[in-house]
Image (cartoon, rainbow, N blue to C red; front, side):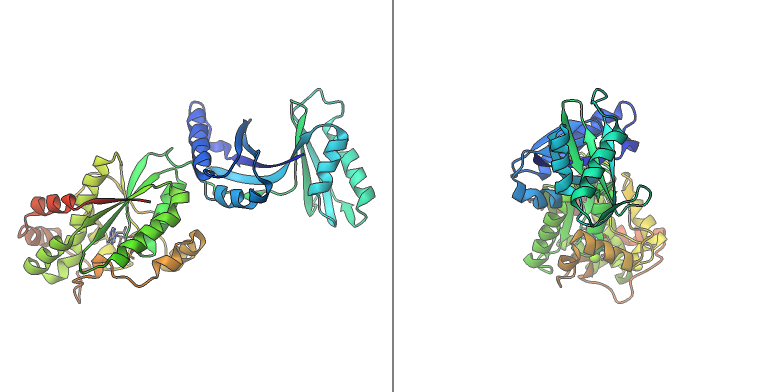
Length: 383
Ligand code: ATP
Ligand code: MG
């Protein structure tokens, strides 16, 4: 009898040719997430089995697979041979001490000498004999003991379904570049897009020396918290200090943020194309701040060709905070470091800037040279 973990994925993604692709991505991701922990990963039909691990590490394995998108649910159970004696031993090990229960048997091995209802009845009967505080209820039991008899004379016995991260395996939707700020929102946006199978790369803008090393370390820390979900292995940082100084010196103050954001998007598009990313992702939410109005969004979108995904667009701050807490990024996000967006922040930023005004002000700058200069400052941090 061996402790194992049974993983299930949602069949909905498994149409035709996609199946192999989906399963390979999921197994790659599971292997990555279990790196450093002894284990074997076996494929069963529509499921995976993690076996041969150090039983004292079962909890750690579960913590890790909870962060792997594409896993719909999982169960910690027992792998045993399919003799009735072994099945009963396993049932005893997983079944509760009290309450109502039923045994539910599934039989892939159609040559097994007993039918599924017979197996359930016999195991359930024996269980009742030794656990007097248990009662059978076949309609709404508190617990179900699942017995899954497999073809090779083995069986899986388990009692609980735990919810997995859901979604689709990271990489199956391609690659995107997230603009990550160190605030609460952008890490949540990363998590949401990874859930839809997007492999998320990270780009952070800083304006050293106005922003300090602490701000950058904070973003590295956030990236590390995210990486079990997103499988991100690097963070690109780009310095926009000179761009901000030029805007501050030459352009209308109320457009500071609007213009900076256009630079950010231009630079992000270049970084994305260099790295094979096919979309940009931001943590913007409609109306949250002056730059996140329809006019602000239009202004930023109009300088890039890549699609910009904004998964938080319809979320309230409170909803975003709840998610950040669940992901584990919140406590880091609220550490007080200055973001480059708040450097030179005008007292009254424009909320509905006209495109013609933006373009007029921007014409005072050598946009291409500033973008090039910023790109030359790019650094990569391996996580
Ligand atoms: P966040 O909590 O993600 O910082 P926010 O509510 O503070 O968001 P803004 O500062 O306006 O909003 O930023 C909007 C989006 O622009 C962020 O979600 C992020 O995607 C991007 N962004 C802002 N600042 C930076 C930065 N320094 N580097 C990279 N991206 C940034
Ligand atoms: Mg911010």
